Amino acid sequence: MIWFSTCRHSWGPCSHLGNQLERPCLISRFLHLAIGYWQGKSRTAAWAISIGFLICLVVNTYMALAINRWSKGFFDALSSHGVEEIFQSMNRLALLAIGTGLASIATTQCRMRLQVGWRLWLTGTLLERWLQKGNQRACAISPSIDNPEARIADDGRLAVELLVDLAGGVVNIVLVSAAFILVLWNVGGSYTLFGNVVPGYLVLAVVVYSMLTSLGMWVLGRPLVASVEEKAVAEGNFRYALTRARHEFEASTIIEDEERRRALDDYLKHPVKKTLALAANPQASSEKECVAGNPFDRFLYHLANSWGRVIQGQTKVVFLTHANNLLAPIVPLMLGAPKYLAGDMSLGDLMQAAAAFLQVQLSLNWLADNALSIANWSASARRVAALDLAMDAQPMELENESLREKEHTAFGAEP
Image 1 (cartoon, helix red, strand yellow):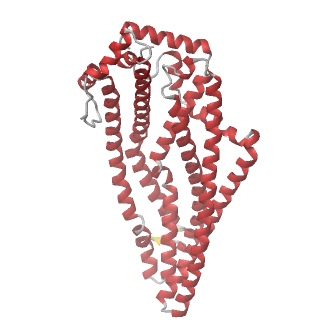
Image 2 (cartoon, helix red, strand yellow):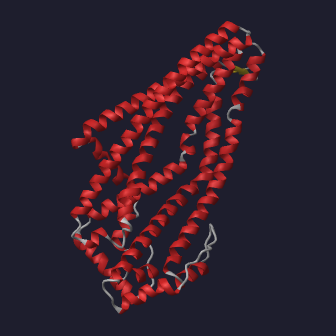
Image 3 (cartoon, rainbow, N blue to C red):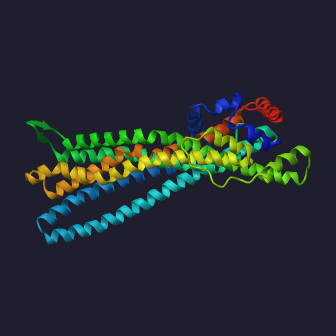
């Protein structure tokens, strides 16, 4: 099969199998595949490390609450000029620092061991199935499935590592939000606004503030999710192009024929484009120029355009993120200042409420802050699920897919 000519005229998944690979059910298929780690022979170790990871997250939340309570006593001691109380607070802080450090070590150990164990299980499962299909070349290298090696090694690793991080983040959201909302409710108390008593006004304020920042992040970051997935696909296609080119050049030293020689000449007589604009909206004329030149130009063209869209989207997100980082610590101090000045709240209460406000705000904004990680995980999970789907497909379907691709290559038809 002269793959060089194919890539000049064909791009992306095609035909019936290719359409299946684009369906949203790929995410659910990946989760169904990956959940097997908690079944079979690996279930004992999987459940043990998972429960340990959950316990560590609970301990981390408890340590955060202890530090929050410590801040109240420390700032109250400062406001009353109590030297002895300040030194006692410093001793307690040393103990809290040791406890927090130990909890962080345990959390890191459990998290990374879960990631490595899950990744090895998933990689072994995919490798076993892939090797069982080794006598069916069309299944291992299908026109609809590029770079199966990278899907197993790189995408499998990223899909597991990011999923563990995201799952831990979701659990942390529930624990931290529940704990610190209670702190805000008890410490902040109520506030009289225009003759109306607003109970738990700091809780209401943090929810409204988080909703506004999350809405802004969703509006600005929603296009970024699709751009990151397109970038991941473009990177994978480029890696696959390099691998297949190396294989074909190695094969040309063993088997020589006229068609193969003409395909290899395209790589040698046309220089590779070294400067491509990072345009968010590519022009068709530029793409035609890449198709007429070196076969690698088209891969680089799609890679440059996908990165251009990522840069454009991430710039908008960074603007909102930095603005939020500036305002988030100040907003609770401004909200609590009237009660502090009126004598209804001590300095310790104000600082404790401000710290709790920031913790809740960070937790409620977790989804928006991790939009890029979610996009990267979604892209990797879909690529792994697509490979798993292709290996489940009937051999005849894959063989027909390969034959159609060969006919398409032979006639040089445009899609």
